[in-house]
Length: 162
Image (cartoon, rainbow, N blue to C red; front, side):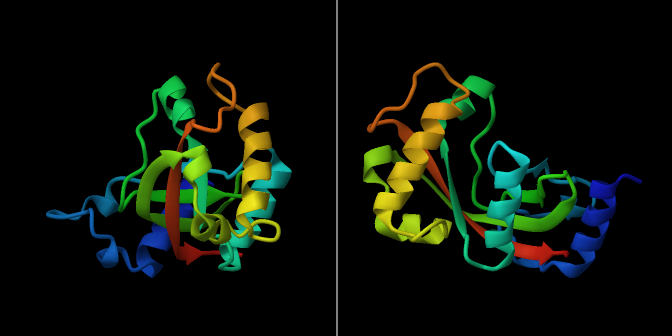
């Protein structure tokens, strides 16, 4: 059994999966391991953002809608589970998406910026950091634009391990 599968087995036993509203009917949670992923694009950023999640400071994240389209990925939805790994690929947290909305970059609000938990948690800081990130690390070829659609995701930790 690999490390992520072993984490998933422990997380299923400890997390309150009954509170995840999108799973209904026969319990597929024992059968379907959620995807494992890391925040950011470098091991250092993955560790930094994961630490904020584990501390309860970061309860939201943002992604460029154009990246989802370029990579052919489905958007997250309420009830989506994910295993968050650290910068070395070790599983550390099981999270559930509690809310998803898509807005234009320049319409992201201060509440969301605060929930992302980074820096001084201000909207001005959020815009500066995310404009830089979306400019430097786009998976698409459209570049950054103030009116680009951004997927805002709110998360809740269901299980975490040191």
